[in-house]
Length: 220
Image (tube, rainbow, N blue to C red; front, side):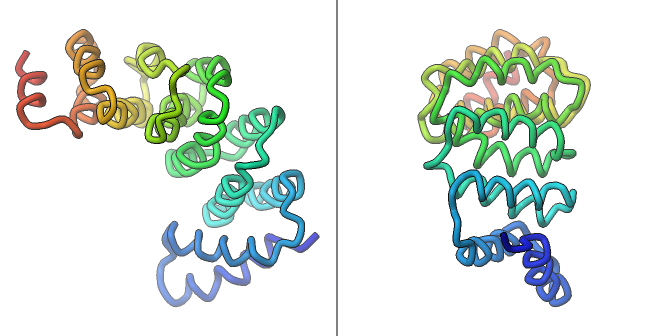
């Protein structure tokens, strides 16, 4: 097994000295590192991901979540519990949450909508990033039209008046994405809940609607 942490830091350091690292640059380095990995079986890749995540560094986390997405064709019945463990152990803020959930974890949910029963439980979790994940993880399936057995509005109901602004923004973002395919349903939901939904969630949800609809919903 290559020392993936050493290899990653070795490649990241020159870039960080030359200019600030962005997620895009880290993913480019991640791609180059992945090419030198001989054994690309899911178990071996996940073992490397765990090594990277154990360092609790943003750049190494980006590589780990990128690699987890690269083996998406190998996802199996154990993958959810691996991913859920990573979410609860290694994710600490909204950036990690969104990177993980809008790629690898979202793809898993796309492949198996039945996992939604587990997702609903996250809405009651004490950590805000797990609650945010319950909404953000739906974004990928919605964008790829693989959410037939998911219930986005159920998640919104559970998170409606959450006490953390990043959770409120999270489900507002999810509603915004949903409005691109279910505009009528989203508008009905917003109309029904506009007096109880926090303004930050409401305004996020409106962003993809045309000006006339926005004005109508805001003035009703």
